[in-house]
Image (cartoon, rainbow over all chains, first blue to last red; front, side, top):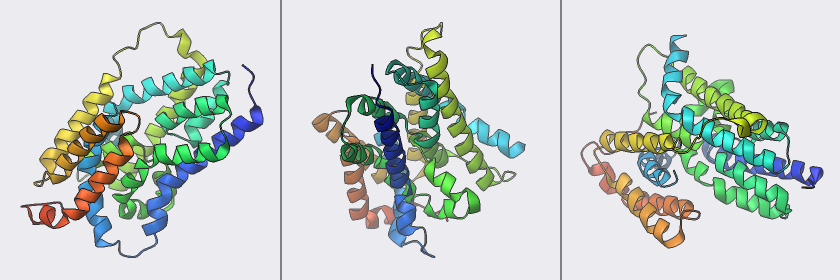
Length: 59
Length: 233
């Protein structure tokens, strides 16, 4: 199989950059605030139970 | 040393899941014609199992880069939800903050949600050791898979059940941890509904979004139930 080296490099960089961006997004939006909004505190505590059940369906 | 040992104990349930999927990715990228270096760099800079596997087919199919970016965002969008719970915790970790943010995977998130810290360990150090160990394990597994995966003498079928077992344990712990079960039930109903409607490949984001909406609507009810959810700042 012929590999397009340049395209593959740019694809890897794109995937890595966007993956990093999605992970960093909550911190970009809320990381600089002294006090986190109460809603974010609440979701941070309540969401894990929902997320864990949903992730169970992915394995 | 005690802190490091404590951290390593927490990731034992993830070991086989990481090794198995990492090796599978390594074999896949090698079969596509890329060297082990590509597997290694993917493990270091992407560190997302499902996305890395999808990336292999993207690299070989010549999909436009804007489509690569869009697909990556939607496949990884669930990480936005993970981050919400750790903004405060991670930003208190000094220079480790960016690394912790960029290495919060499904499994590491699960470990952080279920961990019970003892008094004789430093919580921040434990979290860092967990994140770092998992990342190094992933890099090793991807690289090993690309270099030698096809020469493995044993059949690894069924080994991925360890991931299922781990997530079941975490779900049960979450159920027992909170007096209010609305979040868990919301997740379950959303997951089942969208799994049936959209299939296994497309259900995650709608399920997460609808759970989020239910949690916001039911905030008052969840907070009023005995115990409810406790904020841990």
